[in-house]
Image (tube, rainbow, N blue to C red; front, side):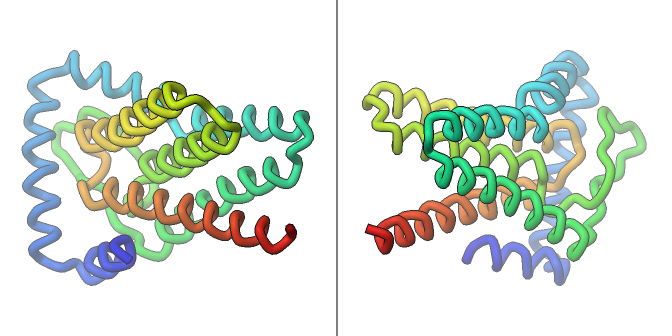
Length: 199
């Protein structure tokens, strides 16, 4: 629901939201220009640690692991949800066609449309699915706690790197988080209902 409202406001270029985006983006960009060392750290995190391809490789490893453990339907479900997330993300980028922030002195660069943030949405989907796998496998309370901590750090962290590097507006990142969370919630809900109907 929130993601749909945000999508609508961005699509119609609602002035208060656009002004907020620009205010936050300009403040972060000023900081980035003044702190090249922090920029370097953010680029490592966004290009290697939390890059969408890193996330996809991670979920692919888990899918293969589930497959070889005999949980083939569940492995397919996880893979399908991940692919659906990528498809939704690319469709929205093409449909909304929002331009990225433009700076006279950029500290990083990115191409294609901005809304929603692919890094933020991919990290949210993958981390959410990994946490689901962890819980479903009967992980201990301590393991779940560490899992949640890793999810929060990764999801929030990747979004903040995209903002600090000046390649996204705040609402791009927020949309990535919301849409990713909505997709994972939808996937878990449908899976539980279909699994229950097969019993």
